[in-house]
Amino acid sequence: MTLNVKTTGTLRVPAPGIALPYTPTAPRTAPTSNTAGAVPFPDGFLWGAATAAYQVEGAAHEDGREDSVWDVFAKVPGAVLNQDDGEVACDQYHRYPADVALMKDLGIKAYRFSTSWARVVPGGREVNPAGLAYYDRLVDELLGAGILPWLTLYHWDLPQAIEAESNGWVNRDTAYRFRDYAVTMHEAIGDRVDVWTTLNEPWCAAFLGYTGGQHAPGRQSREDGLAAAHHLSLGHGLAVQALRERAPEANLGITLNFEVEDPLNPDDPADVDAARRLDGGFTRIFADPILRGAYPEDVLEDVREYGLERHIQEGDLEIISTPIDSLGVNYYHGNAVSAKPAERPLEGGAPVTRPSSSPFPGGDGAYTHPRGLPVTDQNWEVQPEGLTRLLLRLQQDYTGPRGIALYVTENGSAYDDVAGPDGFVDDQERLAFIDVHLRAIKDAIDEGADVRGYFGWSLLDNYEWAWGYGKRFGLVRVDYETQERTVKASGRWYGQVARANAVPERSATPLPHGRDDNGGDKAVSKA
Image (cartoon, rainbow, N blue to C red; front, side, top):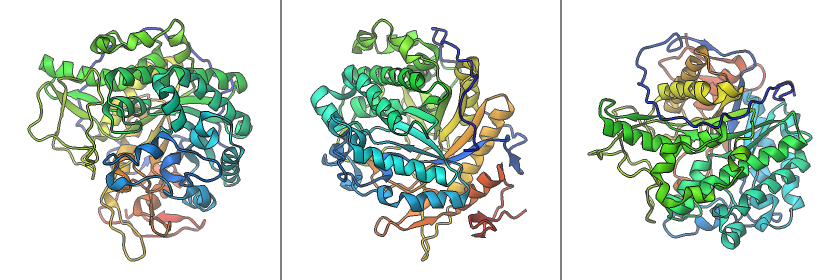
């Protein structure tokens, strides 16, 4: 590979052992030099696309794979829209060569994918050689196409047997089993994969899965969610230690999801405290132990009655804060937060019939309010300047002092795609969403944030968890009946960005499309 992701000579700085308080910042309204016109990115900036195993692979019970918690949860009445499941999904298990060729044609330089624990160690028992062989083939295909494999070990698909027999992530032992699974994967493909992400969005796995009940395994317990959160962080640290011992030069990291929590009225102490609660229960409950080596005192106080501190053993925080090389940043939207409920709140969850609860153990009395911003098809507000502020906050408080690089590992949007007779989707709203967020990233880079890459979510339309197949995020449309792939307008445009390493000047009219001289899809910008 020509892309330099190894970390030879990196100075890995220990965590300071001091957590940080919540400090609100004001939304930015002034235009910048990146607001209009063409925007070049730094040399070597990495352009990628992302998916997750359960969302795209299919082959859910082929070649030795057994149930994950999501296979079981999808069968619970009312848990997933239309009772959709990932049995077939995008069938990437069988179609990966064509998907890799598609990425190569688009000019995408890195593929962020996850490996399925339930495929590699089905039932959490013996290693499945057929499962490992799939990822061996996928990695070779990517490398043969000149695409960097960006591997995530866990994107929420815990083997169901570990959940049923051992209490899942509520049980401390699962962290050690995760470490062993990480070593298994590295033994198989570590000679060719240089980038290893431990967990994707542990907040979702812990709190949507064990406290709110919106995600697998569907529990509704504040105590269980907090136990799961700590053990996920512990599993991350244990895996980093084990991988670092095996591969000192590998690029090791974690991906966290972030929101920017703004007090609706920054002059109202109650609103500020409500925003603090959500910031603590969403961002700092993971960022501070992992990147600073301590839990914030206000977060511990917010959830004291639910027993988080009972699970924190001596030495845990040193393991959890084991130095990493990269932090993956997933960002979709921010929130305006108040101590008072909104008259007409935006409902952003899937309209399923199974009852659920708040995923915030310490979030009582905190409510989000609409601000009149544009919204996606999921009622998520479009707030690109929030990404600028987030990246600068991470650089200043978390990653910068420890020499950790930032990558935006997920960013994208669901819109009501309308396909033409040929399957083409002229998704100008999604294209504009990506455009403004890339410009926001460049604002952060210009102000000192060490952001080194961007991964569009998602490469393909896919299984969108509780939404089933009801929401499409893809740069590429998937016809779920035929599995035919058709690059959307946003995908053609993104390929142009990746090849040019620059965001082109926007056109007010839809971009015409065709084939470029290298055989790839292109979008032609009108000056």
